[in-house]
Image (cartoon, rainbow, N blue to C red):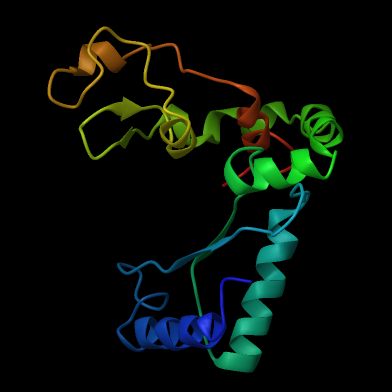
Length: 170
């Protein structure tokens, strides 16, 4: 999907990382990210991780620590595609109906910030791509303080449903 030879190159990189101890040494984690090409909602991340672990070990002798899943957010190219195919409302309804309150504490915006090239601060990468800055009078890394971020109200929109659907995005 990402281009000719990308899979083979990725396997080479993973093997090189394993040879350097990543995924094997407890101090050198090797985490993989699975981003499906369509409108999938993760139901059992553990099962998917087991499939990846077995396949990569059996076929390529590759080991890793964790598999993370990213549910596609209805923004960017995926958002344009799903809207153009007249499936945006159906996908949003699936995301909404698949809400899982048990994953809410693990969403990235609760413990991670994204910083743009110009220093503007965002609650997550997706808010950065949508230019939805943090709710604070100080909006750049140059003037924001930890007090601006403590107990802050996180900026949300419909794309956030992708992080709380099913097993949630990792």
